[in-house]
Amino acid sequence: MSADNIPNDYQSVRQSAGYFYLKDWRLVKATGTDALNFLQTQTTNDVLQLQIGKGQNSAIVDRKAKIVATFSIHRFAENSVFLLVENTQKSRLLQHLETYHFREDVVFESELPQNSLLALQGPKSPLALKNRGWIANLPEKPNDILQAKLNGAPVFIVNKSFTGEEGFILVYGPESASEISEKIIESTNDAHPIAPISPDTWETLRIEAGVPLYGKDMSEKFILPETGLEHSSVSYNKGCYIGQEVIARIKTYGSPAVALMGAILDGDVRPAPDSAILLNQKKIGTIKSSCHSPHLGKTIALAYLQKDYRSPDSTWEVEIDAQTFKLLVQLLPFYQPQTSKDHAQKLLDEALNYFKKEDDLETPIRLLREAIELDPKNARAYESLGVLLAKQEKFDEAIALMKRLAEIDPEEIMAHTNLSIYYMKLGRIEDAENEKAEATALQFEKLMMAGKAKKNKAQEEAQQKVDLVKKIDMFNQVLEIDPVDQVANFGLGSVYYELGEYSKAVPPLQTLLREYKDYSAAYLILGKNLEKLEQYEEAANIYKEGVAAASRKGDLMPLKEMQTRMNQILHSTKGP
Image 1 (cartoon, one colour):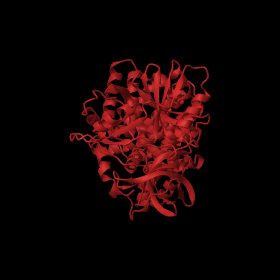
Image 2 (spheres, one colour):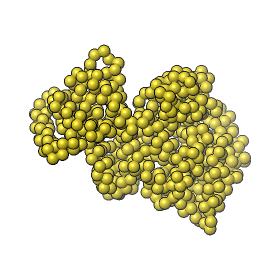
Image 3 (cartoon, one colour):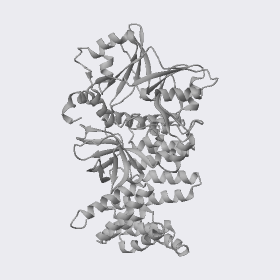
Image 4 (cartoon, helix red, strand yellow):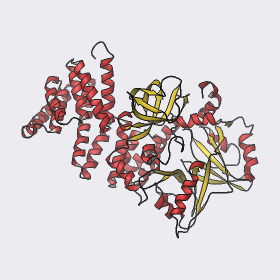
């Protein structure tokens, strides 16, 4: 789809409101006194936390954490919920549920009277709905559900975005079809018009929003953490379910070998789905859905990338379908409206203010989860939620959040500081020391920048120098006992860098890297010292080795800076 044939209906969704039918989606109804308890044992999210009128994203996985089905759950009555699922996943979902359904009082229905689903999307969709005169209230938060009446017939309204904008789904039966058509589709109300959206434009909108679809962007061959859906579809605090151990282990001890990321490609050519992404003839990923993005003015794609090549903002010259592209890696989504971020910020402020005044942790935790769902890149919300969860001794989820924070903001000191604390609580001493070292590197870097910016604070700088000299003595005492101690060598090199004694910083960092070749933060500090000594070629070589080491470990923070510094050296005719 070219940029020329989408602007009108695309802009309707981005600036006002538009509608399209969800012909490829269906509701499955679960009713019975055991409905919620049964689903709790099968799904990845915490169904028992749902109050009437609330909903959540969820999934079912097998014992290896591979996807059985992804869907959302919406509780509309005491013992009744709807499962909103793609048609392509419905049979697998029902088959799984019935396989594990024995004596529980729960009935699943897939052929419902409410068999029409109409999506309204856009920042003015709430106003457009309310202005039609038959809806007094709307579900306020993502996945919330409420029931309204249209000429006496039930119509369910679900708060659901498929485009990155505010959005709703109307669920209704044949008896309401003509009324819906008259009020929504054929309405001549010019104050808040709702424009028809073509399938091609919806595809563009949902790719910009980073919404993966089954059969296009994922299948039963993928484990859930590879898709990124676990950020909104998994509870790490609920009881057991099939595949729980695998998902928890991946979150706590590492990251999946491949993961769904955003890819921005130069040029106007759209790669074919499932095309291999090759770097020097080596496959590093796979293209899935792609389109031209009016928001960015470039070709974008959802792509699975291997661990070593998915650092945000990294650029790779790759080959796709026998053509050469520059591929820029980006965290999803590509598009996010400012209104959602504003709402997320308000929730964050509300959570922090509540925490200062009250002893209850559950309310601010709930608010912070909502803030993250609205703004997946809100670093302060991740940090705050991690701290509160750690107070509840839920260290596994707190660790997962801090890892995500380090991806979002590679220069965030508290991500590594908190990781060090949480690992220490779990008895993982080596991991704790490594994270502490990463935090130390960031802290020294920020202290240096702050010191240069504050020229009038000579007294503070003098005191800082005294403290750093004390640290030198401390590190040297450790090295007399163990000359290859990694923390002491790293600390010594960092302190000398801070003091501007660059030639003294080089030997301990070189010693460290001879013994610990994957210590990515040490490559970064060593390279900086070499730059200060105007040894630019040596610095570039160190950065090259460091980028490879950071890619192997998945260390996004030093990887990004080393890649940038190396490029600056290679593309400059003179030193910085």
